[in-house]
Structures are given as structure tokens and as C-alpha cells.
Image (cartoon, one colour):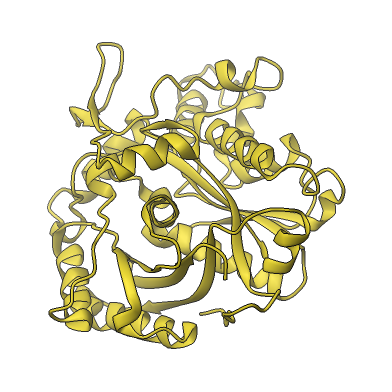
Length: 372
């Protein structure tokens, strides 16, 4: 699937007019940008009170406690993934200023990606139903945390966003799929602006699940330990952004997603996704100034790199390898890659973001840093 996005001065060109990140560098886009530009390693050893499961190090958001960041009201039963999404959305809305959710909340949608929702909440709730005196002796306030759309729904309720609300789950490509879905909502006039991105929490439960899934499967091996984070972008038309005094930090030019049935088809799928996304964006290969691959390691990562080398040949644009800095963020990985473009890309530079998922999908998104 793909979205046709025009370039140039067209006021209907879709732009990212705001962004915010909760990452292992800390809360806020500024902390993320400083860390990425400085190539600072944000993966740290666990403290004595932290249970990292099978890992000795992790890319965890420092000093993030839901109630400390969001307050005590309405957060008693809120899980970490939801807290991250709500906090990140709040930072983005504060940055966007008046004229977004205040005037027409029905015109603002949300598309949030996630892997499984909160793995810890799902497993804790299930454990309580099995170990309690009776299966229904569970805390009903915790049940909403077990559904995948908890973070998206609670973020919209918390910030009174009444437009379309969607949860997307697509493995490592989730952030790119969320961006593409948000673009379709806007192009079909279902809303006027969308907060889109992805969230992933770190927990002992997720760590063990990921570790077991990768055992004996070289195509699943990550580069480095796990991480957590949330990246959200305000996507709207260039004309609307200008009308409300918001400056575009990136323009969305094109995207393409290709399925492959087995690992041997990764090279072809990545190459096709890249070439078709560039064609859709009307961008030549030689005009790409920044590559942000998924950097997934294992068989898939090697094949992704081989496909990009085949396309760009001896001309090798600079590459931003985020996973080695912040850890494997699972479903939030691609959204952090897009955030990396905004943080590290030069104004006017064309960036290519690629991602590959072990379940058989490759994706590419083309962006131009700055206004169209």
C-alpha cells in the first residue's frame, strides 16, 4: 500500500509540523536531538532494583514514573506504555499551541502504533486470574490495560482528541505504517490533523518474550539490548500548518510497503519498496542525502544493508543507525527512525527511512527535512 503525496508549494502537501519524543535520552524532542547528534549511547546497565530479565543493559527512559510525570489523578491503574503515550502527546500538543485540540477537537485524530500493548499488564492480569482464589477475583481497573488500543484511547481521552482513533500493530514497521495510515485519513478528509507515531515499553515480561523468540532464530537477532520509547508527530497539510503559525520540520513525500514470503526475498522486497517510494516522491537515487535503516541485525539486517548497497552503489549517503544508540525499541523503532531524520537531517535534505520485519514485510518512507 502507498500514499501519493505531492511535492512543491502545494498547500495540500502533508508536513510534520510538530514532534515529541520520550526516549532513553529523556523526555522531550530536545533531549533526543542532542543525544542523536552527539551519537551518545543511551543503553545503560540496570540498577540494583531493576529486573532486566535476561539482559544486563537496556535503553530505558530515565526517571520515568507515570504518577510523577502525569500526576496522581486518573493514573492509579495506568500502565507504563499508556503513560508514555499520554505524556508524549501532551508535550506535542503543548508545542503545537492554540488552534489544534482546543477549537475543533473532532478534527484532530490519533494513530498510535504498538507491539502488543502492555505485555506486562497482559501477563500480570492473566496471572492474577490463574492464581487467585477464583478466576474473576481480579482488579477490574486493570483490565483496560490488557487491550491493544488502551494507549491510543486513553491519550485521546486525556487530551480531548475526538477525531478518528486508530491503533496499528505491524512489528518493526509499525511507525511507518502509522504514518501512512495517518496520511490516508488526511487525504480522505476524515480529519484535519493527526497525531501519529508509536510506543513501546520496557518490562521484564517483554524482555523474556523477545529473548525466547530470538533463541535459535538468527533472522531475529537484534543489535544490542532492548529499549523503550514513544515518538509522536503532528501531521497536517502545509496550508493548515501555515495558517496556525506552525513551521514544518519535514515533508512527507512517499511511502511503499512490500510483503515477502521468506527471508530469501528480503533483498528484492527492500529494493522494490525503496525504488517505488522514490518514484512516487519524484526523487532520484542520487538526491538522497541521509539513510536511516532499521539496523536490525541478523539475516534480515544484512539483507537490508545489501539491498541498499545495491541501490546506492559506491555512492553511500551517511547512515543514522539509531538502534545501536537506544536499543531495540520493537514497534516504536521506525517512529524513532523518523524522529532521527528530524533531529539529524540537514534542512532541505532528502532522507530515506527503511524497515524490515521478520514476519515478512519491508517498508520505505521518503521525507524532506524542513518545509516543502
